Length: 510
View 1 (spheres, one colour):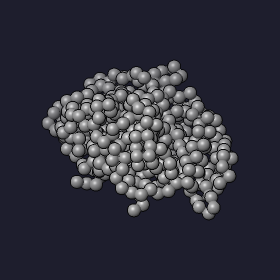
View 2 (view 1 turned 135 degrees about the vertical axis):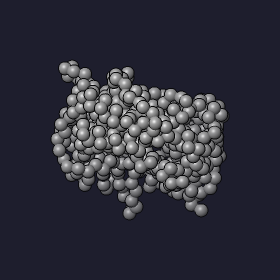
View 3 (view 1 turned 180 degrees about the vertical axis):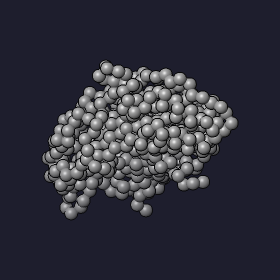
View 4 (view 1 turned 90 degrees about the vertical axis):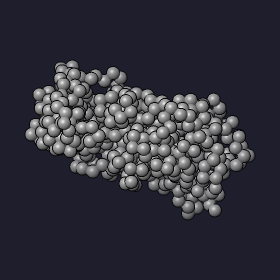
């Protein structure tokens, strides 16, 4: 088994490194707002294609006997602005432009992409993909019909195209100044602002056609402090599918205070003794437990290939009957929200676990066809250069019926964890590990000494089964969570209420 098939990494990045020349975008606002013509027509004009072109390309892609073909056009413009040493001194921009053609024939998938969108180049790509996924069928694409966006989960007030660099810089400066003002131990601040604007045009041989405008913004700050010769650092971030309206005094204040507070507490923190013990997962970022421990194992491609430990567990009880786990693409402005996925399926809310029962895998088109069900809208790709695969969106646990205080009070000796940096999982075995940046010892039912820099190690199905208490304080962590799978990265979020896992291995001091 290839390592990329069973080892998944989940990393929270402080900023996105974007390379390229600094140029002025020629687009950015959603198509169709002028009212002169439809958004779909504007998108086709933007990419320089006609419906006749699309039909020709799809016919070429099916000429070797494929069952199905889709075309994915993308134009993404990304901007990065960075602050270091008290001033904004770094900026860059990047453009991604091209289209990909996917052909499916039975269990075969052929894929090719181009960065120069002309009819001739599209036909070459289509025939390349066709040769990879050939068959005996004679399939013809049907007439295209627009699939409108039913609900826009990320409407934009001020598109990033309309925002100049000089308008962004004061917010980073304000963030820097506030962090320094909050604590005299602050020695250095590294902050960044990244905005992305994507135009997506899609069509397939079943007649589906859509246009989606996808914004994204991320604000991050790392705080470095010194106390009596000791150096500590931590970070804070917020990321949403929003335009320039995201930048407010409120978000600057939240990120600044969180960066300072999460750093300051580390001066009091110790590395606890390791061993097996109860672990209370704090609300919000503890959702990494769901993502790493079970989320990937619920993605249907792993189950279709019998890689996942949950491959034979569908419709079976896998945890406490009070537990409900959701993967949701419909949270307004959420980093993991999808109006429509990269295969033409509307964004939706999917119960993975309902009342302790495994009720659904996360499906793209291929896995849905295999299982004889409808896609759950989880067909996602990093860019036009990649095939869509089942990917999580926002994965979280719904609220329980206890208070966090009561859960903590029930623990004689254990730890409370609330801030994480990264993690990984072995899909086949279900074993996972993730790194805890900060938390607290629990002694005699109370939070006592702060802790830092420990690993939490366990097995996904067992950890899920060992969740015995769930609090009534659900929260989504809206940081810059990015999930890696099969060499592709996708924006996601995670969340959960505070919950007690009765036994986990804590890697600490011996």
